[in-house]
Amino acid sequence: MPEPSYPSISWITRAERMDDGVSESSPVRAWVNRHDPPEPLQIDIHPAIEMGVVLEGQHVRHFPDLVVTLNPGEVWLCAAWEPHGFQPAPCGGILLVMTFLPQVLSEAPFEGVSWLSMFAVPPAERPQSNTPEMREKVLVIARELRQEVERELPYWVTGVRLGIFRLLLLLTRCWEARSPEHLRPKVHPNDLSRIMPALSLFYAGPTRTVRLSEAAAACGLSMQRFSAIFRKTMGTSFAKFHLRARLATAAHRLLTSELPVAAIASETGFLDASHLHRTFVKHYLCTPARYRQQSRILQSV
Image (cartoon, rainbow, N blue to C red; front, side, top):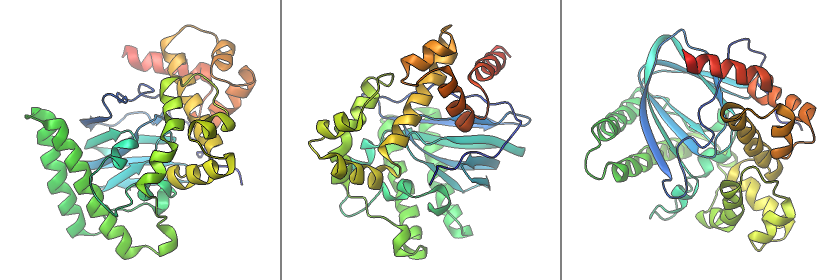
């Protein structure tokens, strides 16, 4: 079954930096964003897991086949390399946004909690703060995190990490209480550890084509076993994950170089400019040339 694409939308699109400011040496980033309309829909793909909370106003999140308007205390979750769009609602909003690499979840000193499970299911099945009591609890933590981020208190990065896990714990409890068992795949931390060598190949050289056989060999697994663990852990196939990584790299190169589209297509492992064009339109809602033009116009404003 083909992966769903975004609905046809005529808004201008753009994306932030491909790496979203995280790296293996600095795997967590957090910031407070104020979004005021009118502002264009932005489409982004990046290697970090993303979690955000609406602090004030409203915010609109776009995923393939899902558009949701979020109110204060409501949360969104985005998996690594997952295409997603965002736009302020008519009243605008203030957001707390946190991005972190997948290994941050496996490093947590907590036993028996399947943190990655929440990101490995489709967006519509992910946990949400769907009661007034839950939203108030989320806001209490999010406001504390806002203080950490804006004041840069001593050890504030550690404070952000702890806050991320406090939020995830709230969501996990709610999810497990309300969701059917089959919607909650149990992703063990060891599963992520087993595929980390393959993920490191992406982070070390995102322009290089990584074959399934190479990724499996790096993890010491057969291709069949690697594919099964990868899909369970990351919520998508290795091929789709790899495609998203190459697309994000292509988008980044469009913004940071003068290379023609054909050269970028070759550099990022696409067959030719036409192949990149078709795939780019499906995920970013515009052609590579238009994306480059629009992003530069927005950056000059």
